[in-house]
Image (cartoon, rainbow, N blue to C red):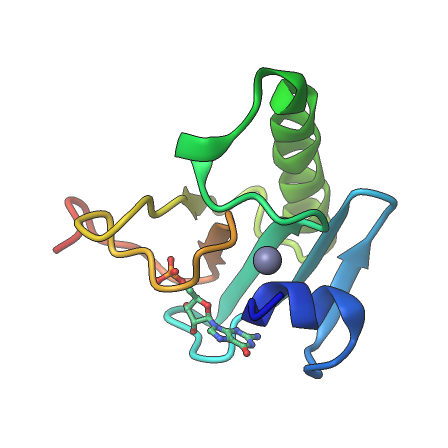
Length: 113
Ligand code: 5GP
Ligand code: ZN
């Protein structure tokens, strides 16, 4: 499949993987928007939250728990961090493989642009 993130899962495109289990991987974003900026993705191709199957609902819980674990490991849990999921064109999604951005280690503004 011609999907950048599937290629990262397969190791065809190199990335700095910071967490991996049976169903998920997390890796540093290529174009970081904060001192800490990583992405958490399911290994299986799901285009976005909009195409998520009912049977995948547990996967979302696992993604959020993995995010919390990594945030603790990286030492940003106390100061705080942000989780972002872009969906579709207006949502600013550029890679059509569901991913959760995690940004931290700086004060983030709200609302975003
Ligand atoms: P989106 O705009 O779809 O929510 O976010 C896609 C993110 O993936 C962007 O922040 C972009 O920097 C990141 N990205 C795109 N291609 C690659 C890649 O090949 N490797 C890594 N590590 N990140 C990528
Ligand atoms: Zn994919």
